[in-house]
Amino acid sequence: MGEKLGMIGLGKMGLALAREMMADGHTVAGYDIDPARMDMLAAAGGTSCANAREVAEASDITFSILLKPEHIEENLFGSDGIDKAGKSGLIHVEMSTMPPSYCQEICAKLAGLGIDMLDAPISGSHPQVEDRSITFMVGGSDDAFTRVGPILKSLSADATHTGASGTGAVMKVVTNLFVNASTALLAEVIITGERAGLSHEAMAHCLPKGSVQGKMLDMSIGPLTQRDFTARGAVEIFVKDMGIAIDLAKDNGIDLAVVPAARAMFQRAADAGWAKDDATRVIEVYEGKA
Image (cartoon, rainbow, N blue to C red; front, top):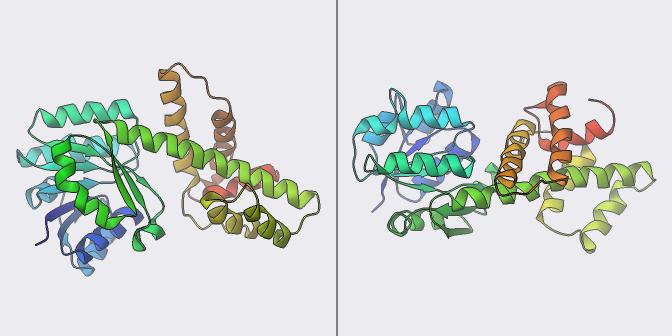
């Protein structure tokens, strides 16, 4: 028998996850600030709610995936946040990418209200939700993971309990550190090869055959060579996530060098008006179009 689940934030990832949860036999109540996204949830068989509090009232386990800390704050502790449902024993799973220190702060605050929180950020993009090749990095209590782990494992290629509260958030930050900086580096690889006379076909054949092979190359070489900037991971998200990585490193006594340089290129792309475009559009900064 399925669980009563709630999804707060019905963007591309949140809505895709809600659909897969329902495919697994769970009921899903959801909320998004955009009524059109709630209509899409209802069309898929979910229940639309007026706010996060109503989602919590209808659920035993709530999930949220949101862009900014202020969005998280509003939906957890605002005038109609999940805390207003007064449901001691509720489990909340925060999938949003956020600073680990903030993650630990809201976890402690929810614990004081009888709500157990897991931080369970995702590695992967929304098309990977449908084929269940995303992965989850999950921090929090053993008891909460025992309850929620089977749900996450069914939705993904892997769901690993990384340890105490905040460790999932740390794992996501360091994962993004690699993904974000690698996107900038691959843009440099492609444009340098182009300018030096290599064909796209030659690079597409040779790079995966050598030590550059890997998922990042597979995902990026097409959009970079074809200049296809349909959003998969938006420029503005890369700017945000790299800022979190830089701050985390500083908090631990490390001054990063590569990531700040890469972030500056994505910031230039955002300043050029490309914030909502795919992060591979950073190649146009190198081309002098920003």
